[in-house]
Amino acid sequence: MEPDTLEAFVVQFRKYKEDRVARNSFYSVVQFIVPTLLLLGVTPILIRYMGTGHYGLWMLATSALGLMSIAEFGLNTAIAKFIAEYMASKDTNALAIVVSGGFIAYVLLGTVLVIPLYVYSPALAEVFKSSETLSTAQIGSVIKIISLGLAPLLLRSYAMAIPIGLQRFEIPVVITIGYQILSYAAALIVILLGGSVALVVGSTVGVLWIAAFGALLIAWRMLKPLHLQYLQVLSRKTLQKLFSFALMSGISGIGSRIFSFADRLAVGAVLGLEAVAYYSVIISVAAKILQLGDVLASALMPAVSAWMASGTIRRAQAYFLRATGAVLAINFIVANVLLGLSAPFLRLWMGELFADQALLPFRILIVIYALISLNAPAYHVANGIGIPWLNALGSLLGGSLTIGLILWLGNMSGLMGVAVANAGYLFNFLLIIVTIGFFQSKIQKTSP
Image 1 (spheres, rainbow, N blue to C red):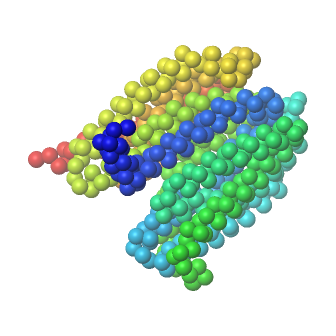
Image 2: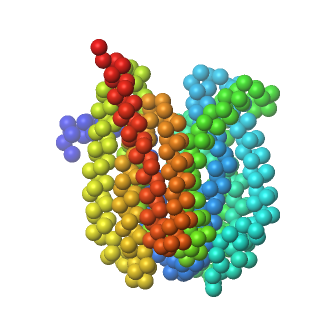
């Protein structure tokens, strides 16, 4: 490398280190790539040794665990937000109240919610169809085991909010990826040793406890230099701000949680656990298109927020339209490549029998997710221009419509109907329409 080139590289690297947006975008990309590689590498092995029914039950359990995290209702976002705010204002008293009040809230949530879930697990098992390889009793025992993962799930979420608030985004990424790697590794070890699906689920819960304690330890060490007085009297005003913000943030997240986890629960209720296995595999790949669009557009939120504050509305509008056009072009290429390679890809990855069952639903999901992903820029821009209610409306209605269609079309057309049902989330094109209208109205008001 020539001296001039080396010097230019060093300058660019220093700029990157000082640019939080660039660093956070890099971490988002890493968090996108690593789970994708894990998914592609581990899934065929797990299904081969577990069978589709047992794998479907494991996916059902992990989906139920993810859905249970809705109990925090945006509290982690609120904690991160106010940690950042009070760090900037150097209000250590309020910071200590947020940290300690948030911890108490999470402990109470984990304690209160796990008891009814554990006790009523046999009744919940009746919702899902049994099969020749899985009885209702086995399903109930798995639900009982997974209920023990709610407390560490909430504690891990609380702990990761602290480094986010301190703007150390690499830490949550490392914790999340580390949990996924350990979870897959533990499942593989249990399966290769001849363990049951209940032991696989138990290993997932065990790894979750390890991740929770590790995250709490890291968070405590990060806060230790601040010498916070955690045992002081909690301020009603500070806690009211915290939980009011959590309520608003929670409403925005309900729809996405419904869409991300409850769809598998609905498939299990309508078609059984083997269908959950097929559905989980193909949608996990198709959903990467949506995740890619989200990663590419995530930097728009702070940029648009700054441009709106400075009055450069046309610039914000131009970037929004350019980003939407760029996502459209990328999705067109990605979708066509996936459609063209879908048959050999599924056969090579999952085998001939799996491909025969899932190929057409997989292709349907590719098209649907390529269209849904077009809303990613509008989602981040809506937050930047100060209308987060739009995202809440789109997520809640789109997710609910999708679940309803799964229950209806799944009964009629099986896995094919379930794939088509995902089109319910195309309701989110409302985001693009309203965002365009918002910019036009603002420009008209500022025009002479």
